[in-house]
Length: 615
Image 1 (cartoon, rainbow, N blue to C red):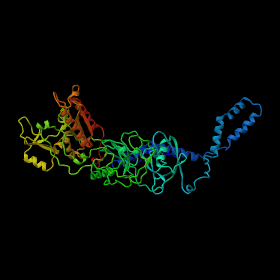
Image 2 (cartoon, rainbow, N blue to C red):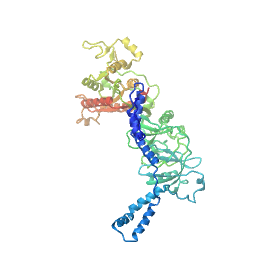
Image 3 (cartoon, one colour):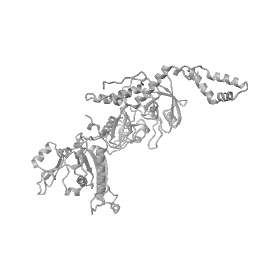
């Protein structure tokens, strides 16, 4: 700070002093961060408002105003009676009219109330017929305003005491926003109706049908020290979830449906089985229930053990969790699934019913197959790349993500193009690079074939011997490699790094298995899945452009079916790794769309795995 501090007079206000202090903050090389922090704090508008309020209160205390009299209304009545008893002049008639005006009477009454400091409300006496058992307990009367939205709370019956208690408060719901209802509170009355002997389904119906003001009589739970902090975790869903199909959920109507690829904000992890989350970008303030990561993984493991075809009611299928109790809530039934009304202390044996839409054969098969090249293409192209087989099935549940914005000092992100049959992604990649070679580049592949007369080293290929190629395979330098006409071809990690080192965005088209190697913090790959727009059959192709982008292409219905199956299989098997899907209707339109995507990747923040940016 500067040494020439201004002289402050006793009349200087706190907000003025704050402004002067902010102006005195002088940048210092050794304390720049601290000074920036102080300047940011002192410049807060809310802090300035607090200072002004403080000054007003201090001024009121110092002035300590005292009323001249405490009964102005009575004095006005006496004056009115005097004026009404005789002849009046013009000024007296005007005074009488003012004193008899309702507004003036009200102002004088308020004056007397303030002067006498008679602010405290008069509480009615306790009813004589109050339950004896409630006299020794603290009873809380809560009044909430409930519109069409549910209260956002679930209830259950305690299997030991039989009491109806609040089982869960949904973050962002009406009950949560009020701050008056808490987990564990015992519910005694709803709108004056005693509910201790009612079934949870009846209580749930009363709550769901109540509109406007709703009054609850509650016995507060014994508060324990809560060391859990509110969670703010962002996840990318790697599976589809439908609560109405999940028999294990404590309340289906409170569940949050989502699809693979949706981004979720987890706002509460207090329950280790059921988390509360919101979809990113959803305008609904109320959170919903989703299965926790460990719970969902455990369900998939259990399903693998019991087998994909075992009946859900099979005696060999054990329950997932003995603590998964059913709850009732005030959510309206959607008609898409059974209404949860039973309160059961234990879950049924519902191991295979996990609310996840997938093909079990996909999980048990592992990541083994490539779908990019058709049989015809393989006759004139290098063969399939080689990859390690998946030894165990992988379970895709959630991936923790965060927002990432590329800095000017960082290398560009790698862009990985994967495509199904007929996508011709190499042609699309080469066209985009040719339009702007200063901005985009491609990884130069390695090959063992002899160099042709018109070729140059490091332009079309890196030409190396078979011994060197085999050595590079052994040292894991290739992300993929294969053999064609007794010659080997491969794409190396160093060829990608060399493009990125030139501050160019590197575009690579690879088999999707290569993502296992490329999905690292070093490359931060943005994955684009390109698939052709496929008509229903050849009869519909008269008005449609070729899905492969070529000219005079004659495709049979079998070809179209194979292309469609390829896209479906690739999307099912690798869709959880894809950031963007590009449907290629024609080569020109796909090229324009791809350029737009690349510009967005550079300009706008993107969701990436949190491990890529966490140090």
